[in-house]
Image (cartoon, rainbow, N blue to C red; front, side, top):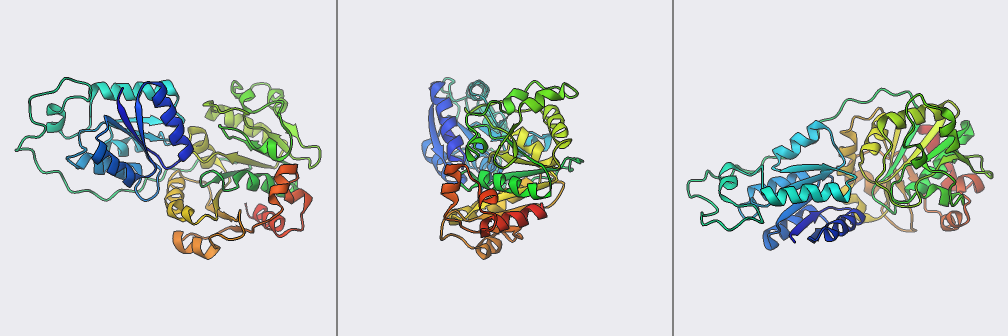
Length: 406
């Protein structure tokens, strides 16, 4: 059993990683931000550290660089966990001092394989004198000193570089990707009402790409769904379109067509080829396709964001959200979007941060300021989205305006 430090600002993913490591016989230590992780690493001296890349304040590359350049933590193997799998990201992780790289969403077997490999080999990307003289965490003690007096001084920290923007994907698909800044900000509420607002201009389809538990069907009282996007995992480009049609459900009250999300957490993902074909087929019948994305940068999400005609980032009105908005916007824009990002502030409580607070903090224009609506809880509970059942409310009119912009 080894003590493993996990640094990730997403509480749900942090707990999932902890459970994976415990089931593999390890002792996880959890940190919810980069600085906390650095402090724990210096004090507790874990056998290995797993570092998420996309974090506010200090991102994962900066955390790795600080840990590698500190003589108290330079011997700790570093495993970078990220949703970005492009070669540029791997190079940046290596330059920051990371020893290995694993892409989200990660399975338990994949995670444990990377962890056990690093525990056996020790740091692979540490300064040469350290690699030669510091044994792996599970190796027998060495009589050689951890550092030679002739070891050159550690280079001063270099300023972190923003991710290099990727070229946008050319796509003519009529898709709007809706992603939230974390859970609990009302992303699905915005996606459902945005899709309904799109129907003023024609038919619309809403695709729930959540991988934990899909909520679109819940919002429309269409549970349990007779099919989900998991039914399309084996759909090959050019195959029978009727299979895709079979995964569609239509809300009889509003006429909105949906592809539901899974009813249980899954590590499945639609491949880029399958997802492209599914969206192409859907676009033949629907001039607007809204995709509800989970707040993780999985390979599936990255492709959707890069190929979407419009991207909507939903921010909640919790003041704590201001700390990470700028970093998330930078990371999303580095993917190479086909159009400017649309920032939407969604008020889920009577009092919270104002639109001025948000724009002053992030220096980014606001596309929509969605007002607090006291009837929203009842609307979700009763399966009666306000865009359809209270179209004259300020909430619904704001979503109608957003639909025209995206």
